[in-house]
Length: 430
Image 1 (tube, rainbow, N blue to C red):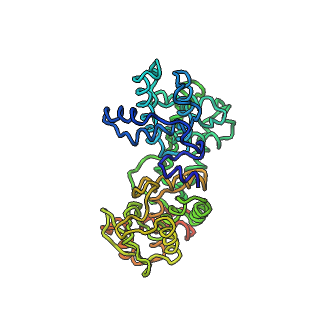
Image 2: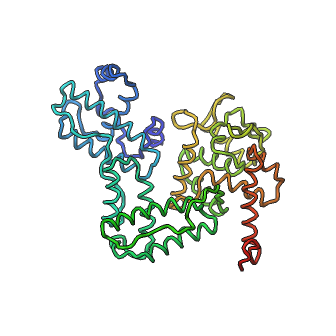
Image 3: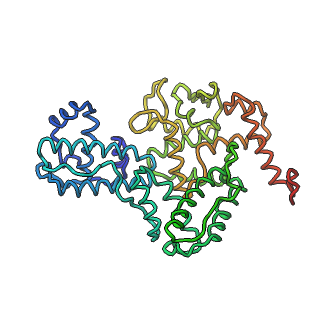
């Protein structure tokens, strides 16, 4: 509960703050005047600066010096950078917090509470904190991006860690890496998964491209002597995705959310169930108002710019999850109020849903297995596989043009041919 209360004040760092935010108090009047004179939001800025003192809880206001201020800021930055490794959506919040702290330091300098203005940029990232698996070349490679001003390196870190943990040599001895090791990694973890339609060609290409850039760095620094090129199987063809999620993955994902003991997990469990039940777009979940949910008839109204408003029947089991969420967390909703909002009461956006799906993917599988879009593709493919009326499926998912649905019909037929016949008549391969 304490952690959730911290989230309610819009500061999403896990459970690492002292519980008493009044250990240090800002000179509210003069600092607010300073902010007003600069045309800044005094309430937001002073509120964000408070978290610096809450986190440190060791700097009395009357004893601030340039030395202990630099040390404290360094530790504060390291903590925020550490959060970014596991929280992709935290970059903008981290920069906002440090930017407000910059204003406070300038204020201290101008009122002569400190003698020297710090000669570093707070918002610039410090040395990244992550597990390099004992590979110094890995750390040096990521550090090179930080020095060039890259604000987000988590994707690079995750992809390279995935690679280093699965090659048959210790990461600390990467100089013994061979092209055969890389090709086997590509085949086992990407080519075969693409052929089983567990991931798309685009996803495989993105992951392998990050590995390729790391290998280019190792070659340029003369750690390895070979060059790695992606096979033609991973060349971008410009075709549309049709990501399919197996039922056992959906069940594991569902159980992960179900057993997370947080208030937000209940909200995102409802969203996940609605996505797999209706095949709707994430934006349509964000647009849901209380008036769109018809409890008695078990109906839900969906709409967005891409599709007309439509009413769909939902399973009573899923309806009850939504009812429980509304009664517990969204009491006294007015008809025009949004059902799903963040901790500050702002309606969710598609990015919130996408990032949450990513986060629960890591909790469940240790990697990204599917996206919010994959759930829609899976619903459409399953609906066509089960021989439902084509026009009805098209209208259910909000396709204005039947040709959009035809794409899934083609992939559905291909999957059935590949999986049910002793040979594929399209290729005549046994």
